[in-house]
Length: 415
Image 1 (cartoon, rainbow, N blue to C red):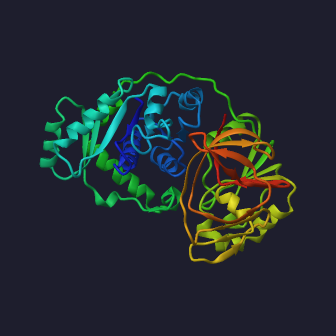
Image 2: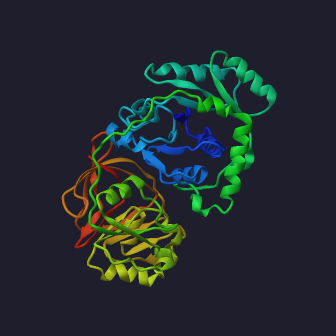
Image 3: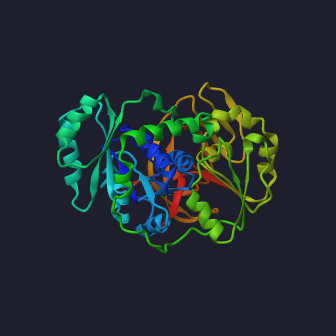
């Protein structure tokens, strides 16, 4: 049993269905999870649901060998897709969930929000089933079903299509969200209750045995290039403000012999002694006032001779000031000539092709950008030359000054 949970579009309920499946199946059978595409938030919910580490599998940023090497293992794998099944980056939708399914030769289970349809569900399902002959869409899970009568209408329309289940409408499973996606798993005091409720609902309305029996080829070990560590001792910020870090990156560094330690800026912990300090992305804008008062943390950055690297939120904290959504200015580390603001929000979203010629992250990288911050001022030497997913030149990204560097890009893999 390994398969992909996908949908015709975002908002179909595939995350809730995935979490319910992971928790329900893991009650009797070990299972692990993966998320297609660049996503830091859903994987933490997956881990909580099944008790296993969650992978990021990105068919735009990663080679097929890299994806196969990450997915290989003895434990069955459930992969949650992103957006619609065939939605990827322009110009040719590379990186879509369908690409991950093809690379891993996994069957696809399509979650359809049937809340506002009846007979039309057949045309939608058949369109996805027949669109790509190389893809095995094994069947559907109907979501948001209004009543037993509604379910019967849908099943009649889907004659000849495998229906793994019909999940009834459940308003209590709506998840709180904010500007980058769901509220983080570690911020949900009701998380266990939520996961158990989702699992109970899914177990009562989905044929779990049929899903477990889905045929998929074994995922054998596969060797792929890995990312060497930027230093042998690495200190990594980790708390609610700095939570966006790809596990495969840290695993690569560990396998290469690097020693990793973690600290909490929000607890005003100074960065441990290390050769490299990594400030990942997250939500520093929600904690800007608190971070501005964490003088032990900020002073440890100001006085170290280690290389310091910040991504997105971490990059903003390395600047002079961060302006929150209410327009209040908070003094940050002051190590880069950078001021950012959330008072006027603007979405920056997309894959990035990056070239670094100096600093700790030199070479070619595949990454992504997803934030709402506005740059008020950025002065100094850029860190990366940048292009979008179509190869169009963008403005240089980030800044580097002495031992400090960063940018709004999240690095996914070396290319």
